[in-house]
Amino acid sequence: MMVDIYDFYDKMERNNIMLSFKGDITSELLTSILQIMESKLDTMQEEPKIKKKVYNVLVECLQNLYHHMDEIPKSLNGASSGVDGENIRSAIFMIGKLDNQYNIITGNYILTQNVEGLKKRLDEINKLTKEELKDYYKAVLNNGEMSEKGGGGLGMIDIARKTGQKLNYHFMPVDDIYSFFSLNIKIAQ
Image 1: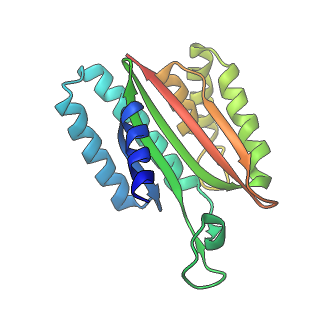
Image 2: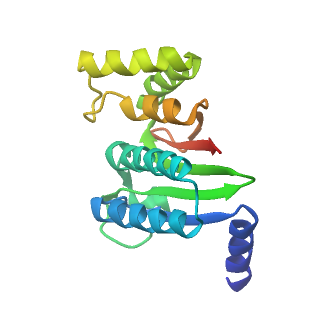
């Protein structure tokens, strides 16, 4: 176990991971993470423009986790204790900086039946130019079209707009019911 923890620490150091978290994303945790990252960005004496961009994208990523992760059986997450049949919410989040580029990585379980719809929406966002993204954002906002979880997909559109980058995502099937959705957002300086 001690060798494993060093290996984990070493990987985090090599990838310049500033903050990492695994577990349920609560509103209290969101507040804490944002305060920690704001403090870290201040300590790093980051340019106000970059600091604002990183912070705003971070807010969107964390809100996406908070609002859109699906509950999973404890057994799927490797938890052996607790009440049988009880579900949990679990996600992973990391932020690092490597070569003047911030990376925000999120991962969460989603129902496999929702993969195709999300993939279609992400691919649509990735096809759009900066100007088209702006128009699409306004159209979704004005349309009031909502997803099952209450959002209109504005978060992902906003992330693409603010970073000027394509959304780098991956879906990994876990079993017949669940998949694991990961998102790697790059914010260049």
